[in-house]
View 1 (cartoon, rainbow, N blue to C red):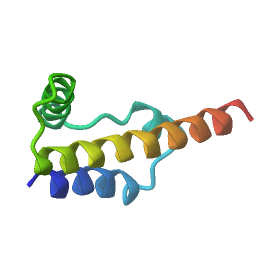
View 2 (cartoon, rainbow, N blue to C red; view 1 turned 30 degrees about the horizontal axis):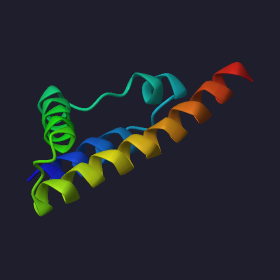
View 3 (cartoon, helix red, strand yellow; view 1 turned 90 degrees about the vertical axis):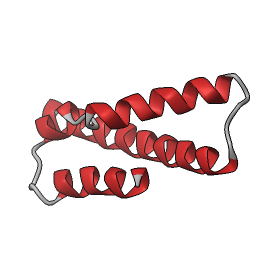
View 4 (cartoon, rainbow, N blue to C red; view 1 turned 135 degrees about the horizontal axis):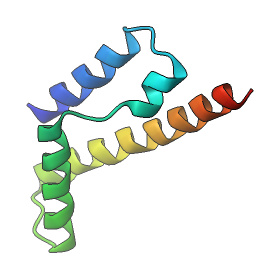
Length: 79
């Protein structure tokens, strides 16, 4: 399940005692990036199912969290 893989990816990073550089370089595995792109395209076309909408919402939420985390990591490196 994609939601489980998303959580696993983030949990792996968080439990590795990441440095700011690690947070800045974090990317989802390629298959999850591909899935996100696929869902975004289906959304643009207006073809998302209810389940796919929920899945896309999870990607969007995770993207928001990482934008905040990466901004804070940049601030730590600048200090």
